[in-house]
Length: 115
Image (cartoon, rainbow, N blue to C red; front, side):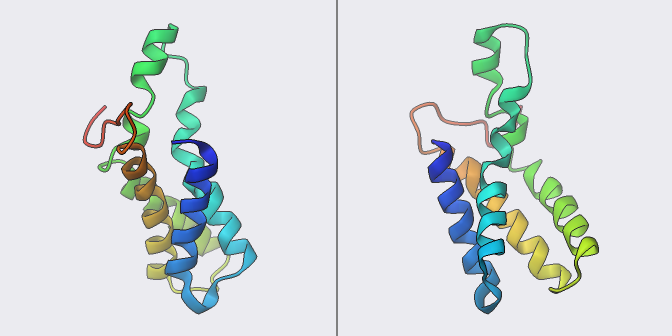
């Protein structure tokens, strides 16, 4: 899926999870987190074919993203303890997990459970 759609979905999910605490900062953070798994395009796997095949690999895995989300959520909570930890982690994990689910609906698919 394109980055604009991923950012829009990330902002929407962040707004949904944040509820009454929703603000522009929350929406922007959700948009940024919504595109985070696509940063794997910066990894060079050796050749253009391998780069295409390995994109949407480990960075889109439903086994990896909840752990990454928990770490990012915990770090964000430690930095600014304005929200309960469970809500921060839920927001980050939900936004990250929706990314590969949306990518799975494209013709390219994604590797939801592996590398």
